[in-house]
Length: 270
Ligand SMILES: [Zn+2]
Image (cartoon, rainbow, N blue to C red; front, side, top):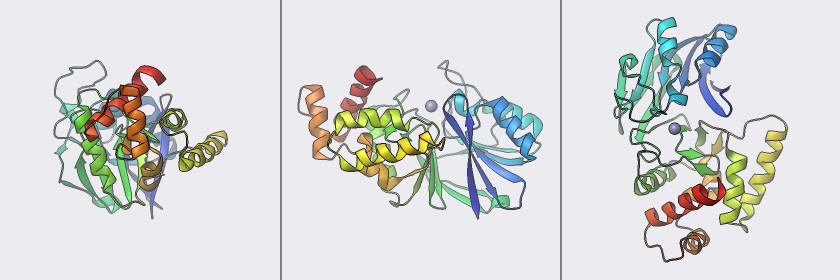
């Protein structure tokens, strides 16, 4: 069985670790926190064989150099479009460490763990952003969050809306592994958008109970996101109406509705 373990990092990141029972070999998704991941691997006597990077931000890539330094032959699999320079202070150049660059439509195989992922291009949060999908799971970095989505840095609202539509077409029971624990905060905003959504109120109670027990709210499922996440529900009439009320005008496209909801959260909620 493939085990997925969250390694909590920084204040609210998750580094996802993929492992098999009885093996010390692991794969890591977005090991941004150098001290945390080195310490964790050392303590558990685990050996990483591959790293999957979803996008360029430092809180997803910050551990790469130190891991490459320590673990010989470690594969670093990263977006084809990951910039080589550092246009934003939030970026960390890791191009010298990348062993494989992948893009939408590619497949990634990690034979040691019996893993095969399809690579999906999901620009919006950043232009280089990828998701890794397979084995009933999607690792989506900062694109879908629990009941929310990442901010728009280098991508546009139209790109992010299209990426949300693309992720929506995955099987409904897909487990969604995002990179931050933001769910309860996001639910607060989702309730502004859809105060009468019964699934959302139920999710609020369920996720609150998990957090009170110290459990992560992640992974969620795609089905749950489609029922509760306002950033994936821009075609639902109640969501569109709420977005139009905020914007003070009629909104005609998915991208316009998405952009209004994003702006609403950025300017009035966060
Ligand atoms: Zn990011």
